[in-house]
Length: 246
Image 1 (cartoon, rainbow, N blue to C red):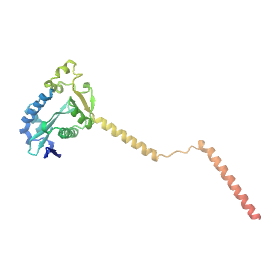
Image 2: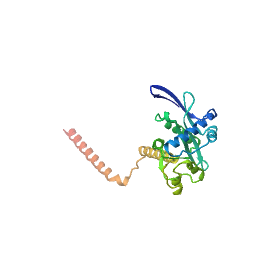
Image 3: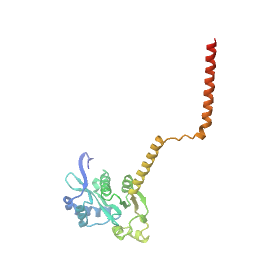
Image 4: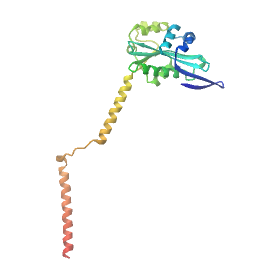
């Protein structure tokens, strides 16, 4: 996916794609940017080593945004837990000078598409303090959720250890924190599609259904119509007879 940005009267191009082995040399720069961002915001981003990020790139589980010189400007990776039951798009980062241009949304959307393609039945989850990320998640179909709906294994929560608010999480036995938990459940779409299909079927049945004739209910009406017709026929016969006589 490509897009044109206009900043300070300069046109810059960027691309968003699945990271490959061609991008392994950028892992160090991405890690450094993650650390700087965490310091500036005062909250933690799940700290990952450059080796970990390289592994994600080799597995095809990372999204990278590049400028027209091939330098990293945005990044995100996909993680799974509980045998693919849960998926998260983690480590979202955009270089400061490239923020407010839709890079984060473009990267997040591409990561979401990758997650849906590779793990169609998985619940996609995330925890964040960023209102911008919450907005993007909402646009993708995420909804706020309690921490009890998130994975229970330690591997998921280990990523929070680098956050300055980790003590809040541990004190509440992983029930509360300053982050907001969000979740996208593919069953919502399946149920919605099922409801829409059922509603459509009902409409079609309504249009084509045959209304059975209830003889006992309508017999009096028929008798009345028959009586009226007979009277009209008799009147016609009388008039006809008079004309013949004259």
